[in-house]
Length: 161
Image 1 (cartoon, helix red, strand yellow):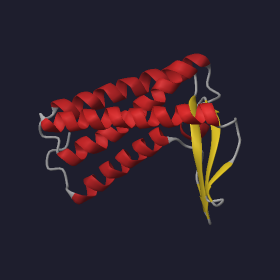
Image 2 (tube, helix red, strand yellow):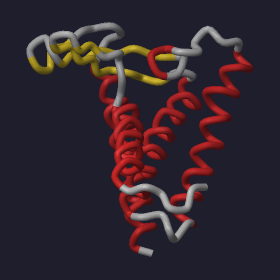
Image 3 (cartoon, helix red, strand yellow):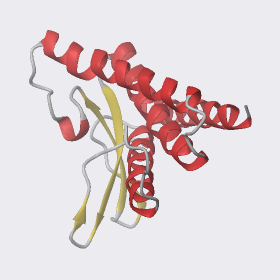
Image 4 (cartoon, one colour):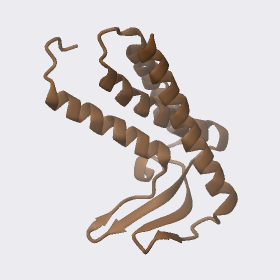
């Protein structure tokens, strides 16, 4: 029961952090304005992304966008939520990783449903490292995916799905 509560708190916290940060950016930052957060390495901007990560799929026809960017992710997130809450053999670390993915995914879906696009605002450039423009939901999903990847290497699954 405690595991389920922790997972739900993480999901809600992730959604809240994402939505609050996006709302602040929508209110305070002009479109495509560049604000230095740390030298010229971490920049804040505001871009409305009508596609998926890095703008992929933004040129799809409207029905394709609805299916691939709204409906399919919603189904996957619901399935992942049920899996992480109902499976008693899901360990705590996997549950936390799933919570980050679910919270971030829901954060971006909220944007797509309410605004028709996702607000992205962070950009990092340090030497050869240059990211696309991203948001806190993207950070959460990436963190959860990296955790799942590391967990898959650290402890082999004896009972594959």
